[in-house]
Image (cartoon, rainbow, N blue to C red; front, side, top):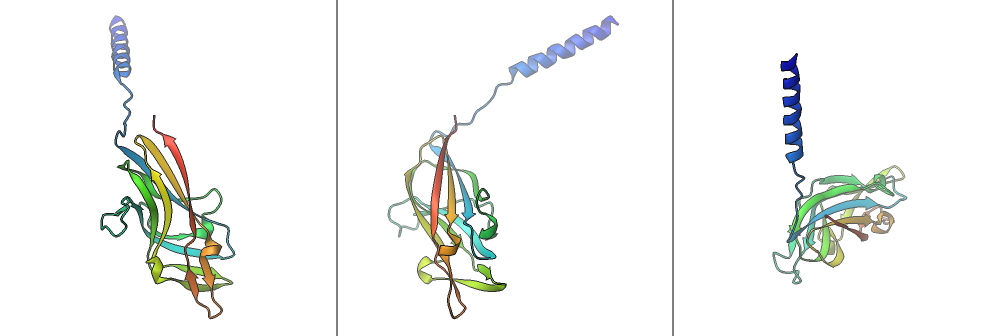
Length: 187
């Protein structure tokens, strides 16, 4: 029996020594920040409003014509999203805690694919995007990102204002979107 007590005390001592020596490690982002980007629709008269999101980009240079002006983010949720299903408190996360340099952000852009449709009164329409939009929706951010912070951008797509069905039966997408930003301290 004394050997059993010694064994139990040894195991407990070893356990306490190892559990007390672990330290909580925190990661800091001294010259960078974390960004999340979420998409949300608004209540709509449409039964479905499907947008194909293929990329999320930030404009980091003032000169938009510079080839390095736009930076693609790691879009984790590309594909077709029905804006009528992501309203009120529901969102789709497009970019999830991506670390980027702390710099000035001029704009945020959603880049659309070709599979954009809308359903109204049981009829499905292919959405035509005007050439001047270049298959994208751009919003002004105009914000200097600070280090060691989390920026949570929610792109609210005004579904009914953005989609118009003509009397000829064509559906046009004229993206109208607002950007809500929340800032969180990491530590």
